[in-house]
Image (cartoon, rainbow, N blue to C red):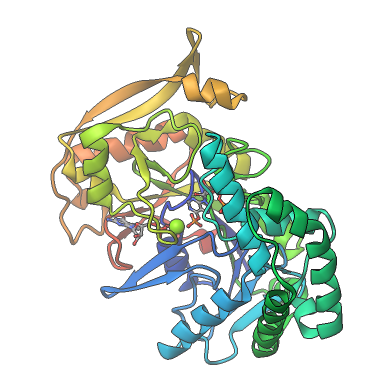
Length: 435
Ligand code: GDP
Ligand code: IMO
Ligand code: MG
């Protein structure tokens, strides 16, 4: 039995979907933990693309148990759409999906509030750049102990009471933020829709925590799929420019309700460069034409919102922080092929703040924003052979790049990805062979 956590080591979109799909070959149970449909995880299998927002990225392996942990915030309509999309492809038709009854529900007023706050924030120069999927407001309600959970969608009277109590407080806030408080008829429609969605999802709901605990006790291989990335963690990321959940590896235990002693290993995913969507400090961001070139070469447009991602050089101080926060024991390096578009490649090896060299980001986000990156520069390597399946298949300059960043990140690579397709992968070690 092995329990493996896969976690984004940067600001999200590192290629977690591709790696989780690959690792699911060896897993019995795949558990999405944390976040909601702010995530967009892309799988490409034999040229066919699938983007998952809520369902685990192990979904393309029929028969594997796919769990949504209690720590998630779930938009039931998005989940139903995704379920239908999967079933149209012959997936999730054997009862593989289990949604935790304790997971919180995103309702239309969460999305409304998220959008209003962003619009108002933008006007005042302090937007977060959220995905507007209602993530923050749903987690706020959870922390305030007035959230709506999946189990509440099965109890009409309770749902009506909860929504009324929430809107009693939120109606004036919506108006204050420039919106229109929802009319009674609209609220009634929201509730009817949520109940209908709840009824359709009911056969897929249950005690996710106990299910995962049983799988572990039964000696199964369990894979936890993180969303977002360590630098977007609510407690440890570049606050306030973060998401509203625990994206680090510890979030897996929290979300699924299992103890940390069950975890065998943590694998971090990092791109060979860096991207960020939304606002917040990004010291290695590449402005201008070169940044645009990298964005186009890497197809760096959000899998959820379609927004152009900000692109920059690999940031080793930020990566080291991710490694530390999640206790990563190995890393998967993705998108090495994308850098082939550039004549030379830089890597930030340290930050300089007030003349001091730092090997991890400073604690104050204002200091991160004014940090001056110290770069090492590598010669470019041209196009990678599309059939590269061993490190020795890579050009010497690409091999040097990989071995240098592995040494400087301080953890070994377990795979190097050289294209979006499942097959375009150099596998170096199997995380499930850990124990
Ligand atoms: P996630 O949120 O971490 O799952 O990542 P996204 O799916 O949002 O973004 C990663 C993008 O990079 C997707 O379009 C993937 O298909 C693509 N991708 C993953 N690995 C590679 C790779 O090694 N090379 C290239 N060119 N694309 C990759
Ligand atoms: P995956 O799982 C990249 C970012 C948003 C914004 C901040 C807060 O695909 O890697 P939120 O909607 O969560 O309140 O937005 O977090 N963000 C992501 N960035 N990948 C993601 O998910 C993200 N999920 C949220 O852009 O900056
Ligand atoms: Mg993504």
